[in-house]
Length: 107
Image 1 (cartoon, rainbow, N blue to C red):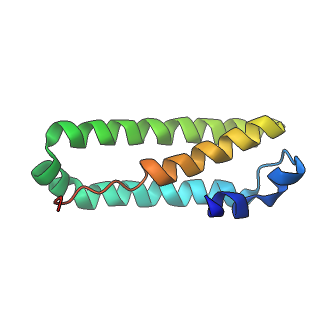
Image 2: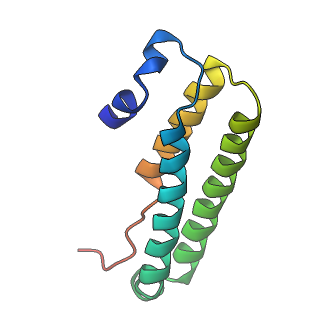
């Protein structure tokens, strides 16, 4: 939560721009999330089961596609404050909930 507030302090001032670092964060997070899934896929199948692993992968892919499309819209059009706030909130929500799920053995 603190990272969200520190990432784009202009949101507190009502700024509508989307900083370039947000686009870079999205690209890096998507690449790292895909790498995490590739390396932990077998553990997910072994410990969590195929159904859970496929569902988490599908939900994660949906988040990635949605965020990529939303950021592409923000790149091409002038964004509003509400859109920028929503975009950053969804980015950090994805990072907190689904970007890097634990696929190993449960304690």
